[in-house]
Image 1 (cartoon, rainbow, N blue to C red):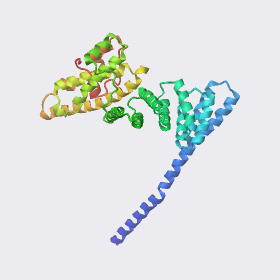
Image 2 (tube, helix red, strand yellow; image 1 turned 180 degrees about the horizontal axis):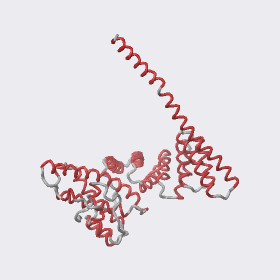
Image 3 (cartoon, one colour; image 1 turned 135 degrees about the horizontal axis):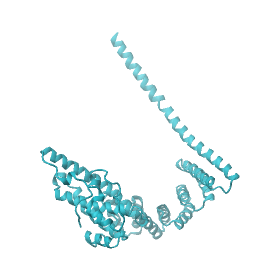
Image 4 (cartoon, rainbow, N blue to C red; image 1 turned 180 degrees about the vertical axis):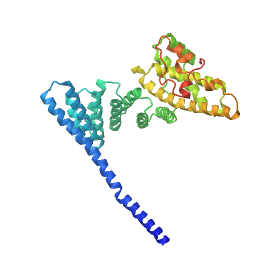
Length: 364
């Protein structure tokens, strides 16, 4: 009897699993479609509502902005579904209300490019570039179009302009590499291969002269001219290069002197990130330095914790370099760098071991 009950339970369990497998996934898929359709329905209702409102009050700027937003949202929905004609229809309606809105031009150009309308995309991205030469997309997609047409010099020019805005963008660097391969420029091909490998390994920093002088010279140059952000970048880059050799070491290989150097070098990187976050011209370099600062901080913090654990395991007192982690504003280097260039703590403040380890003595 017990054996029979056991078999019946197994059969019942199998039937439940089969039912769940066959029928269980269908409601989920249907629900997903319903959610997507609901989003479209809401967008279309918003379009109808604001179109009627604008007819009644054609000079109402708020209604006009709301209608532009509804058009763009509806266009984006169709764009994601690769329904390009519908997407472009709504993007064009938005452009009819504001033909110089760079966001709409960017979306329109992408949809034109993806749907094979290369001539239209070219005109859209050229207009985008005229309105805002700092737009990455305009240069990137024009580079792709010119490359496909075999207009290689034009492609190189556009890709290089895109890289000014985003030097470490992998797709742009790869696209530029392909163009130089087509031209047979082996020197540029080798140069870009090296750069791409550095980007993959998180060791690439745009060169702006940091190998031309010692770190201390760049630091002094910035202190003498607090608006010379290139000098500050070069100082931070020199500190980044110094840190690379330390973060690859095992914690057991790091001395207390090494920790002082690490903390001091992080100060220079924090200084650049803090002082250039609102400087438009520095934005491409700031973005890279900020990302590398974050990854370096995690590596440094991990080593600090491991060193603390090692001292604890030995029953020895933990050196102050591993326990007293001053905030960035307490760093002698940061105080000197920030004097005359605006004060305040470096971005992120004292979030953890690596962020707080940015103090310490001055380093070249």
